[in-house]
Length: 209
Image 1 (cartoon, rainbow, N blue to C red):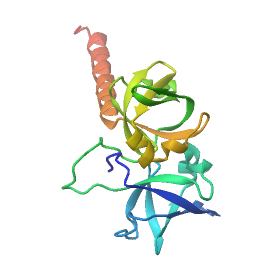
Image 2 (image 1 turned 45 degrees about the vertical axis):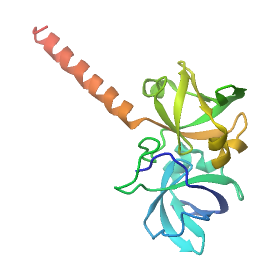
Image 3 (image 1 turned 30 degrees about the vertical axis):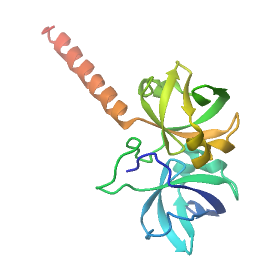
């Protein structure tokens, strides 16, 4: 489990194809300090397990399903990535709960500058539209952000200068892909609503409504 508050920006130092996907090597300056084999680290919003540690280089196995579903497949040598270690039981939750399970890779439709900050307009597939709400939370490349506005086809978030400086968003451009994780609370609410609807249908079928 993660919070969406990025600890540091790491650098991709290796992407090697393997029989089970790819081996991703990332240079860190902080999160490697207490890392152990098997630890979960959020890399651009995707929860990956450490399989090798060599100094400040952390290696992760990335399976085909992850490469297919996320924007990790678009990484190249010397690309920057957002890094966050798993939260501890006594940690403050500065952002919101993120699982590191990416829902889809969204494309940046537009980038604008307004008084609210730098706005990023992201694509929103129909199957995830019910999980993204105005003023709700969303994880973008592992960063906890607040949805400023949403339509059936896209949503917009605004980043303050500190967030731009502390993450990879300052390097993003129109057309780039971003890992999107919708709010887990919204998913559970939607699931409960579906169950309630099914229950009502059963009552109607047997003449109780």
